[in-house]
Each structure stands twice: as structure tokens, then as C-alpha cells.
Amino acid sequence: MSEADVSQQRVEVIFPADEIRQRVTALAQQIAAAGLDRLLVVPILKGSFVFAADLIRALHEAGVEPEVDFVTLSSYRKNMRSSGAVEILRDLDLDVDGRNVLIVDDVLDSGRTLVFAKDLLSARGAKRILTCVLLNKKVHRAVQMEADLKAFDCPNEFVVGYGMDVAHRFRELPFVGRVVGG
Ligand code: IMP
Ligand code: MG
Image (tube, rainbow, N blue to C red):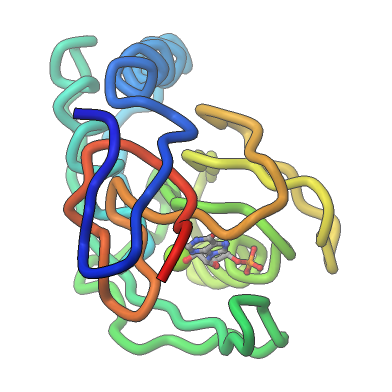
């Protein structure tokens, strides 16, 4: 099945599940090759939860035994575009002082979310911080930020699936795509 029909809206595939799987495996091998001891993986919720779940299992296959803790961040959006402010909705439980950290996010767009997360963990004394995103959008960067690792460059349009939503829908899709119709 390549498309999901939900009420009047359909989601057209941009990145199919098998391509995502291949890229996740390759990313895990790159992360393993970095040889970071006591790695703490920090997925930024909610959008990265599916990506992070696949990535940590690929890390296991690559011989890495990470710990995992979550932070929930919100960047205010209007019309599916980021407006600026980022805030912590739910903080980490673990202390990152002296730890190697891999921050995982779904989309790098304006860059504000990833910069906020990196600055936060750095201010708390993280040792080395790597950033890893599923999708890199290139057009709307508001701050200087490039991810250390990325699965795909993404067209400049709003995408859903593989953990990402619009109005809480489509997170369950195993692929990334664009909403059409409705
Ligand atoms: P940034 O702070 O502008 O870089 O935005 C990054 C955050 O916005 C990500 O963590 C996503 O949650 C969200 N985001 C940006 N673009 C999309 C999209 O196309 N679909 C779903 N979420 C998106
Ligand atoms: Mg997000």
C-alpha cells in the first residue's frame, strides 16, 4: 500500500518505508563509528518518536548500548510555519553532565528547535553533542544550524507520517509524505 486514505485527505508518499529503513541503518553505523562512550539518546518529542524508536534498535544492531531519555519541546506554529519561541513542555529525567548525547529530531527547518535543545544540554554540561534529524529542510533557516547526521534532504513542504502529524493525525504511517485533498 502506498497511500493512506483518511476521510477526504490522502497522504502521498515522498520517502517510502524501505528507504527510511536503509537510511536509519546507515545512520546507526555512522553513530557507532563515532565511538561515543555512555551514549545518551535524547529524542525531541513528539515528532521524533518513531524515528528514534527505529534508530535505537538499529544502534543495537550496530553494537551500541545507548541510554534514552526524552524532552518534549514546542515551537509555536501558525499555518504550519514556525513563529519563533521554543519552550520545554516536559524536561529530561536524567543528568547530562559529562555525557555524550545524541539529540534526535524529526525535521530541521528554521533551526530554532535544534539550537534550543543543543544549547540546553550544553549549558547542563553535556560532553559531546551530536545532532541527528530524519529530514533536513533547507529553505527557512532562521538561525545557523546544520545537523551532524541526517537521513534525507526534504522538499520545502509540510510533511506527515513516520511519527509526524498535522492536527494529531498521520503519525502512524510507516512512510513520510504530503497531505493532498480534503
Ligand atoms: P524548527 O524549529 O523550525 O527547525 O522546526 C522544527 C520542528 O518543527 C520539528 O521538531 C517538527 O516538529 C516541526 N516541523 C517542521 N516542519 C514540519 C513538517 O513538515 N511536518 C511536521 N512537523 C514539522
Ligand atoms: Mg518536533
